[in-house]
Image (cartoon, rainbow, N blue to C red):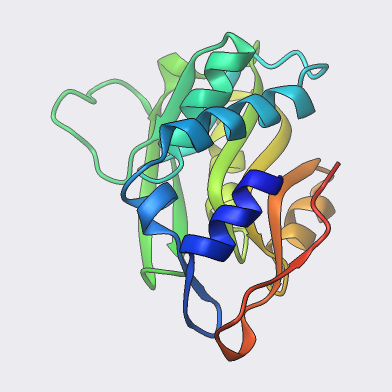
Amino acid sequence: MKELIERIKTDGRVLGEGVLKVDSFVTHQVDPVLMTQIGERFAECFADSNITKVVTIEASGIAPALYAAQFLGVPMVFARKSKSLTMNEELLTSEVYSFTKQITSTISISRKFLSAEDNVLIIDDFLANGQAAKGLIELCRQAGANVEGIGIVIEKSFQDGRQLLEDMGLKVVSLARIESLSNGEVSFLKEDA
């Protein structure tokens, strides 16, 4: 997606091998105009998939997932990384390792928000090793929901996350595919159609 790639070029910062900081427009401060374009693009890519729910993980996946859900006209559900006092109903849970934070979290979604009748689009801000998406897929499968595809804002194509998801038979659409972050420079692959 041209607008996203240009924004990464101008405002993204390489912090070392494997780490791209996009906190001024995606992961901390959110650019609503860019997120609107991202959500609309995901909705276009999955328009024929009969999506009934968009699922993500807190916190940085919420903005792109919400805009995608808006354009698809369906609810957005996010997995929590910590249980709140009000989450007392039966929970779907999975373990997720975060590449950026170097920690494992237990994520959860209330069973009342996902069911076997749902066709799910999973959205996340980054795809690195695929563990967040894999955890969300596991939650959906526990509910009997069908995962129609995965929408990724920024993919680190030099890591094995895409291969993991494609090996599971899932459609992956990444709006910006990073080939390398070597020498402090971002180089891109062609985006998914």
